[in-house]
Length: 78
Image (cartoon, rainbow, N blue to C red; front, top):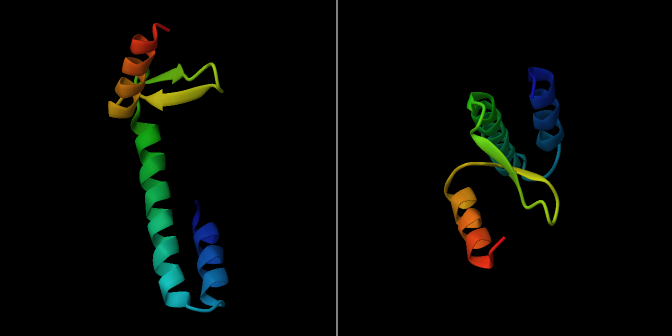
């Protein structure tokens, strides 16, 4: 999110009740969003794989959750 986007979120929240707490929460969301974006940018080719094709195409990072899901696929014989 660019500076203008962050400013508009902060401005909107600061005009409502309990602005300090809401600003802290939104700051956490913004920080998480930036961390998520940076992680996605850092991924290399082969670090993700399409899965859950029976439900909807989902691209997962090959980490613990992905490995657990792959184990379930193996148990189910899929």
